[in-house]
Image (cartoon, rainbow over all chains, first blue to last red; front, side):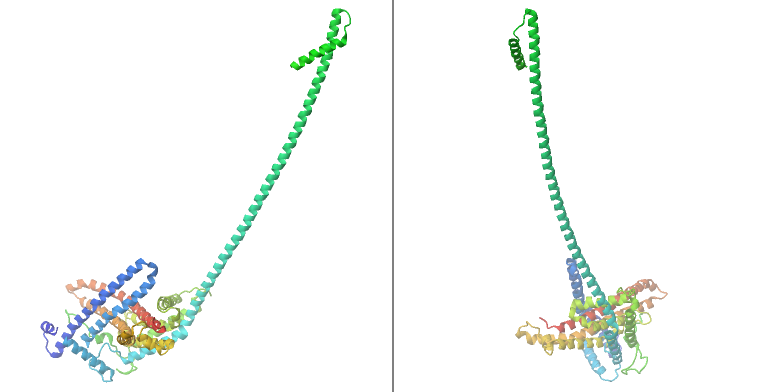
Length: 90
Length: 190
Length: 260
């Protein structure tokens, strides 16, 4: 990664080149972190909609559980976002 | 990757430094700041206390009272419904009793009427029969009387005619007997 | 500088100077603290307004005015969160959960309120404090309902084979007592910070595109995106308040009874 960054940007100092490398890695880290939760939340919501369509009388319970599941799945993407912030701005 | 690791390590040391009161050059945007934590803690605790003792009780009281009223009204409505059903059953039972009573009365009246009619008819028929019988006897009497009168008058005429023919009295009793025989024979032929 | 965009440093987006108190002192009162104060005052005011007798129709129990709003919110928390996750036993935790919901909601909704445009929960402080309080609360509830056995019950679920316990106990310990508060805080914080950065990005884009060049042709799309994202952030504000509250309810409910 750092090689790529050095090729793309003309680094002047060591600190600056490190920051640029960190920024590139931050983008890649967050991009990777979105993949799993994206698939997970899509699957989760799709299955919940199917459940609600099959049993509309259980829709309230399914919706509550769906939000809980989304909250747990989403946490991974958010940790990725935190890593992004750490890499980019610290 | 090495750079990533080093950055993470650097951020970890930054975390460690932030916790100590040493003022950092680059502030980590993720770490909580003590003053903000203090104020949000204070305001949240205040809101919690307010909510528990001041804000929520009247609202919840009204909501519970409404739910209770709804329950009571529903129970009352259900009681009224069961009462209504009972009343309808009672009324229908009364109605059925009245109906059966009416039917039995009707039957009784009908049978009484029948019996009366039958006796009336029987009486009328008896009357008619007796009248017919008396009429028949009268007719028979009249016939007999008429026949005897006729016989005597025919005998008188025959005797008179015979006396006129023979110019001497004829034994009347023998002629009467003859005429009577004849009339009777003729009557039996009618 | 990316494509001529002057993107501000993140310190400029989320850090605010103190209104009183020097920088770094423990009582420094800044914009975040002001928003938290508004959360307290506004919630109290609306509740007090809603609790007046005037908000009932002529002495009956029919609500009107602000009471409708408050009652629907309270019954949402009662029926939609507590009854769905804990059951009727959890109704005594209504004050805590209601305060959580309103405090987080108002802290979030300031993201789209003009002249503020700063979600209080995009700073780690508020979510960390709330998650810490929730953590203390559900441990206290567990201790109250199960005594000291609570810790054993929560790290060693019944029905697990004894051979697996050395594996299960560290995992459960980590997930119950460390990951729970951490993920609660990080979820709220990261959602609000991400939304804030998203809105800032599109605002900066709009400002940059507002020029006499051909780039101004893209401006309507960028602005439409900004408006749409503002609506999206309102939804996120509600959703995050709801999720934080329902997770707190789930944690409290799970420490009331031993799993079986």
